[in-house]
Amino acid sequence: MSSKLFSPLTIKSITLKNRIAISPMCQYSAQDGFANDWHLVHLGSRASGGAGLIIQEATSVSPEGRISPEDLGLWKDEQIEKMQQINQFIIGQKSVPGIQLAHAGRKASSASPWNGGRKLKATQGGWDTVAPSAVAYHHTENAPVALDEEGIQKVVSDFKSATKRAVQAGFQVMEIHAAHGYLLHQFLSPLSNFRTDAYGGSFENRIRLTLDVVDAVQSEWPENLPLFVRISATDWAEGGWNAEESVQLSKILKEKGVDLIDVSSGGLVSHQQIPLGPNYQVPFAERIKNETGILTGAVGLITDAAQAEEIVASGKADLVLFARESLRNPNLGLTFAHDLQADIEWPKQYERAKK
Image (cartoon, rainbow, N blue to C red; front, side, top):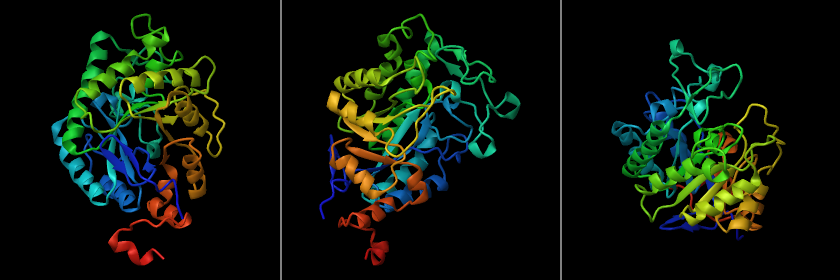
């Protein structure tokens, strides 16, 4: 049976063997930003499990940009080696290794979820956070430090340096994280950006840092390798970043040479109202694809093969990214191929289970 979900997708010099991607998912398992065997097994098992693209969790470009002290990072050369090993394994499974580079901004310095997820004080190993404006995510938290010109340039420079290391580590897809209420998203939205300089106010000013980061990343990222940007298509809050602005930004990003928009939503403000349900974010990916012509990735409560097949086959998105469903089932690609009767290559070690 012919399956669109299991058809290849070529972006620049890279061909994904199918349209199944593993979303970046924080594992809160690193020490000083270093990857370890947990990350090898977590990412590697999803590659052997049949996904075409494996995107490493939000990897911080600086120590202060981490969501938690246990986040992965690429702010120093010593962090490259383990990621190289992981990427070589992923490539050995005929899958493609990707990385999401991120800076958490005012949502940094938090405990891991199983330790409560709350803001960490200095005495608990926390640090001062930065943001476009001195406004906290939650009214109970200390306000972040508003970035000055020098601070903004450091962020841009940190993305550039981390990109150079990502190339050395052997990643083949780059994703810039401008979603989920982290630093770039904080600049995009009028609900968190109250600046009156060149980085605040108008739409053109609010998108400036994201565009600066894209330029910095492109200065180090090979032209023949895919570049994605993840955005939150709406804040799900009145007066916030919205779908119209997402379309407008996506047009500009396409003109700048970005290949795919990974379309998520929300995460910026604690009073957001998200209407959760199967495919609830897919219409945003479909709209951006239709109105700009850029490739899109769909995410959010997509849990079975038929659902994913329909999204791709009907042209709503070009790629489907899985998070929680892939935590439940590392062999998602193999399982979905079986469900859709798609004849794919299995790892030799697993072939006896194919039929």
